Length: 223
View 1 (cartoon, rainbow, N blue to C red):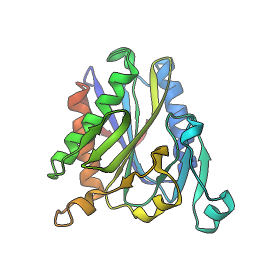
View 2 (view 1 turned 180 degrees about the vertical axis):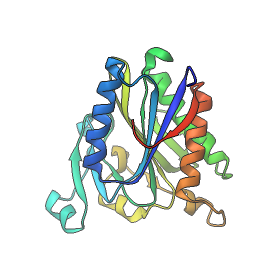
View 3 (view 1 turned 60 degrees about the vertical axis):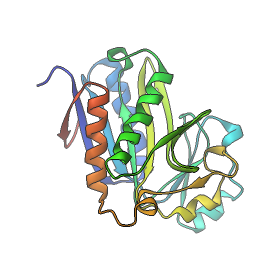
């Protein structure tokens, strides 16, 4: 076993509730050291809206009953940021990292997550950029990836959502991340001529995380 591995667990499509419970458990095991390597969980969720800790950015003008009528679940969770959507065609990643092995700086960590996504987009000839004052990744004036994390004892969970072929009309139900006037986009919208699959994008994202955090990625089926 490599001294510094990145365990990569691709769960395919799973419910938000199931993966939320899983990542909380994995984070607890990472804190105690039972899980002795950093873990990147990659997943695609059925339609779900999540609310973050930043109440002012949870701009959701529709009711939970309305969402339920559209087949959309609603969760209020401990991550940073405001309201966002997860759904089919979106690569969601939950890095469960012990920052004591990297740098004790959450701002640095957020910039690293952004950089991993920017580099992933670059492999598809999509220019990813930061937007000063906001967390996430843009391409031009359009937002393509959202990021919201939580940490305890320097172990992170929650993470990022990269729109690959997401149905962007779902974002019309909210003010994504509480940013008024934001326009969401996807990799497919930006590069309709490119050949890309969720698995390919997931593999490239894992590779970029490994390089940036100086870890050797290793695919696993359970932890």
